[in-house]
Image 1 (cartoon, rainbow, N blue to C red):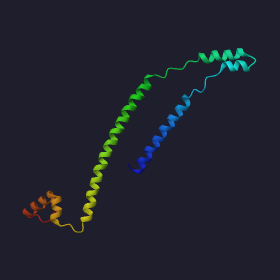
Image 2 (tube, rainbow, N blue to C red):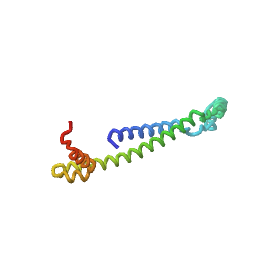
Image 3 (cartoon, rainbow, N blue to C red):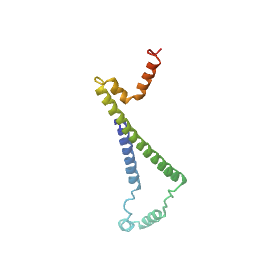
Image 4 (tube, rainbow, N blue to C red):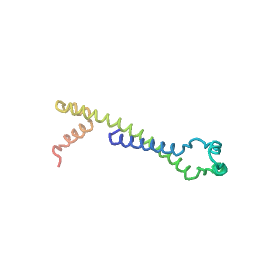
Length: 141
């Protein structure tokens, strides 16, 4: 990975971790209220009874919706696509590394290579030059 893509990946991982932390904090319920202790500490236990009744009457909304399921399925698709791109990029990087090694090897030999050695690596160029010589085409116009 390049430095820029590595930085972007790290920033994305940090954003995901921050979102997970925020969700975990929001989902924390805390301890259950001790209504018996509150009744004992107050002079008006009927108010505590009202609070307890209201507390137990709270219902949580159902978090399942078609939008959430659609997002989950699209996220799975996007993740699979990203993995495929990463795999392709890894293969392409390996190919480019091989090409770079070949180019570096050619550059190191550039000062001492003979035409015969060059034609061994490029036989189609030798054939093209031989054909032009046979046809008496010495200069390309």
